[in-house]
Image (tube, rainbow, N blue to C red):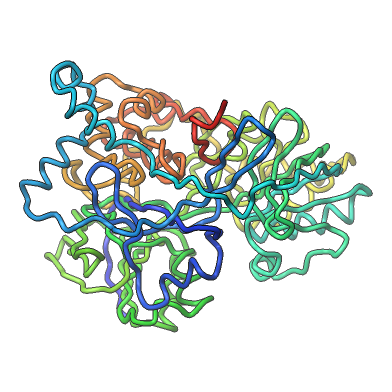
Length: 527
């Protein structure tokens, strides 16, 4: 296993699958990558080939018709990925037509009527076929529980077991992962008295928490007295030149394909980008057992990273203090940094804070509870809790959630944990050092922040300089975060990039409005 010391910021681009009658986690979807990574879609503006970075099941499409019937769609595969762009001139033209603000031009809208229709179509969401889904006529089941746990990390198992020991009520845990996956992460077995379902959490509505149970193929509407979130993390999307090439994937997808499923059989060389998180080393070491692996450590000062190849990645060029190095690779895995899955808590009305432990934003909590929400908890490392204190936090929080009083010692420990989270008002935080996932020193070029809608780093900065000074306005101007992932890739990256390049507090930029459901809704069907 080869190792190179590097330092860079990164960003990533992706497009999700679209496939009939299949969930993303379905074996048939994974089998698309039996031999190697392949383009599965085209980008909306630049028409560049796309392949999934995450391939997670949290990005389905919901269609709600007038009648009380839910249709669930996963993004589907494009049968004809984009043709190769013939010349640098056509590339420049496509980029110009898709650049932030161009299609807002009065001249374009007033005179070039036909061109205008074509240009605005570049920023649209992927078209979905009007076909029946396997979830047609899905039954809606109402469930009452005392405690509901959304557990997408292994520490949720620890908490659930503590909660069962402390509380007398009924407990339901839901997760996008399987029970076996969570138990392997936690090194614990879930108490059999805790009910467990695998599926998709869709959000909090007036009549309860809504969840799609994959096993029963039912929509569960859950009435729970207490709601506990162990959200886990996802890979941050690295920002560098050509970061949208198929073959650039997140570490969790790499582990699924290479390690768990034994796919990507024709992939010989793998390059892993690691940063300031020990999980990056764990990922790289695991992959090295199966493939010829090169580790690129991006923590140290590096000027630039550029990916090359078509229609999938063939390698990267790294600008190091010692000179430029070219690394040929069949697969580029990003394990540079990890960001917390804060969307479920934001949808409950949670506010963002900055955690110096995580070097990113998370949700404002006090003693485990989401500030402003009674009996709703946001716990684990994603809340800013140091790894060494996660188990103690779970034990004390379980006692709190069960309604029991804490001892003096427990109260002191909880206060210590709260202090160790290092939560800071985001209005007081300006990102002075280049974020580890931004692997470029300038904003020019095809460096995508939002691959769903082809929004580049240059677009983002340009929109800010034009006077769109908060993320909600930038979203409406550039289409940032309006695609399939609904901002999961770009929201946090955009906050850090704007703060760093324009020397403004993270809090002043604001955030997207997080509305239920947590997955995209096709507007024309909301009638």
